[in-house]
Length: 507
Image (cartoon, rainbow, N blue to C red; front, side, top):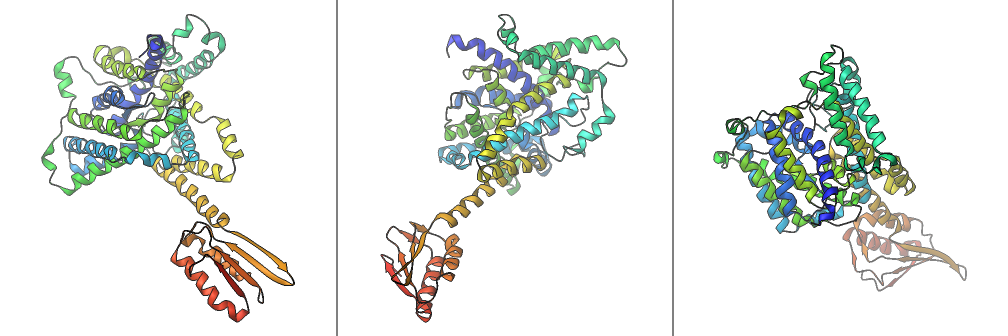
């Protein structure tokens, strides 16, 4: 790592730390597991996975997309310790997938879907953080699903929060927004002193100072539930109490292996999606070795399971914050992980003064960067084949979750592929020569059952007393369904006095 990049990586590492801290804790809270479990995963993802991975900017840690799976798995297995054992084997499955070169599956995800996923995450971030900005913190940080743990959904939460506004939090949120806007101006970014102070860090410092100042005001005072919640680690005993270790006694149960396989596959899919998305944001356009990434993630999950952490995946919110903050090397990711570990153990009292609304402002700005209006314009100008999968991905993500949104976007993309295959596979023409009507049908290299409908419609248009030429010169393979349609037409053509000539076509 070059020394002249250290300053950029340090600033980016601090920003990623500020973004990651509430998300690691919030996801652990949402999963109803020890808060320190989220920190453990953030540290493992930031150090071990980063070192083993070939990705320069991808940040790994506990993922919001696995929250519902974690909750369901713990309920099914009966304890967090047994769940941790399943995480260990999920990691082994990921390593096997990497060795089997399964990472290449990520290359088949359409760009429109990846861009839709990024924009969708940006919109979800904005919607989910607005309640925290207003001081309504009933739903924990890191819950990215439409149906929330507090019984609300992403949209009803926005209405419900109006009745629970915390004035002090809202004021800090507004000031934080103003600071972020000011920090984006050229006079701030170009100043010798300010350029070394990342905007999110300035926001957090001001937020802490205002939290302390508001203690003297009954109206603006901010209670602890609206501040960052941290586990208490005062000594080794507290650390031991916040750790959990795997219980392998349930290995003989089919449910155990089903959950291990589910976690391994879902975590791998999310990682491949996020790696693809991160590569799209990469200013240097580096391409990550996805098989090596699966191996790294698998190693991370094995260690996470052994020491009490939640499953880890590559996570786009932290990765995009890393890129937007000007990271140059992997050092920024390692710095963020070290800060996570040191801060929770060394100065939890200071971090517990950070208002959620200040962090919400940072995450909302991150969301806006992921879902810029020009992205929508670009996709719209690219045509319906690009715009529809893009929009469907976003809509389904908003109403369900990331994986379902991506799946819906891929289905729409496949629909357009099939439509184009049917529409543009064949070359056909007709002409009248010496008073007789001639038709020409050139078969493509591959004819599938998707082409059956086109062939039927084409043959129905051929008029009696004409001649049809079927040219199979470049055809290499024809599906049985399509071949039957051609054979049926040839057998009935003589009744309509239609002459059929075959060129290099084996009937």
